[in-house]
Length: 267
Image (cartoon, rainbow, N blue to C red; front, top):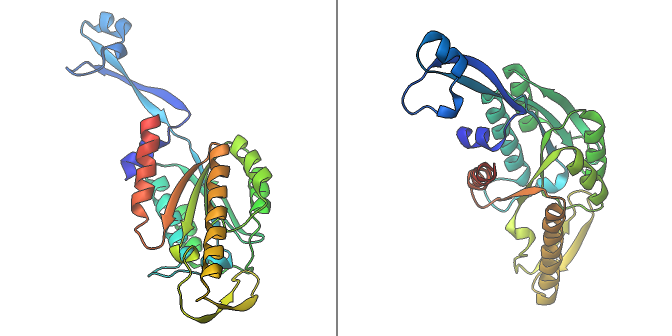
């Protein structure tokens, strides 16, 4: 995966490193004719990519992430994906930072290089217990735009079960490269038929009793969830934002890897 990650995100340019003797198979376009004429045999120029990438992991740890019908909760998967990106960044010597948000920014670590910074990011994203339960993605994106002075690749990791952040997302996508990582559970689309049940809004704490045997109710909730999901995908597409779709019942490694491969081909 590391190779695909490194190829997917290029740095700001290349820099000259050295001149060496030509060997069969080298690109003849890189021949340094001045040096070759001076020393009497063919030499080529070598270059190295200047990465100097800025990455930020923007992780939504609101209470809606504390749901999962499988082995893991959505927030656990979100944290693991963030830790994976942090590991890939340190291997590439990229700068990486972290923003954890709910209805406010709970933690911000500016992008930096080095293992100490990366291990702090991994520790915080896996263990931090947020103070708040709601979601305000618009506020988080506004903070991001103020805090990041240079163009940054931002992995926005959330279930995106929130609304009213279109304006902020549009502005962010113009200043930075936003990559949405959508972590969802299929039970949010298919309510099981289990008779009467309590439903609680994880972010507000409001509870209601519903009859899940009511087919009309189940269809209504399914259509509502699917409509919200489609709207988010349309929003991302409209703003040229790539979206990695992750589900709690399947390994997240495959959609992440497929994204890197797809981006690599576009380069």
